[in-house]
Image 1 (cartoon, rainbow, N blue to C red):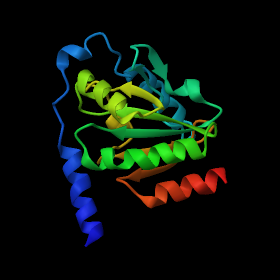
Image 2 (cartoon, rainbow, N blue to C red; image 1 turned 135 degrees about the horizontal axis):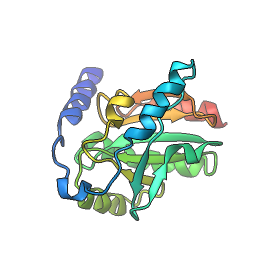
Image 3 (cartoon, rainbow, N blue to C red; image 1 turned 180 degrees about the horizontal axis):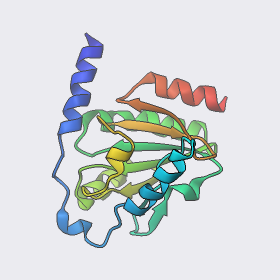
Image 4 (cartoon, one colour; image 1 turned 60 degrees about the vertical axis):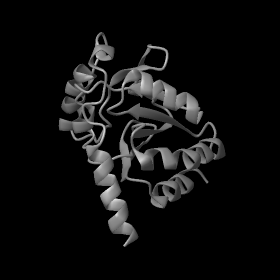
Length: 180
């Protein structure tokens, strides 16, 4: 029953928020298309690399995923409108502190206006990196995101380790196995 309810909420979160982003706020932002095209070529050569991208951070500066090579990275695809995303923040904070310096989290905002995104990050006091993803970005497709939240663990060499859809203790167990 809990699994069915969780699945329904994940699917609900995957449908909510679509089209809510402020289109005017997207002007002048890259959507990561160039990096993804280059990534497809690398993956065709037998590597299972995480699709690279460049998106704007909270200060409007570009953040490129590949700039974080050398450490584990967790991509957290989330939105302020997603109940499970918000409910998962306290445990994410706990693990971010628990394994301080062993991995980086990049919160990838999905289907929010820039204002809602920034207000939520500040209100929830989320201490990790954050980027804003415009609705026209191919990133959701590149990572095959089907629901929210989705967490993707990337190894220091840039290869994909594992993807978790929804709030799952398995994600935290995997972090424990990687860092203990």
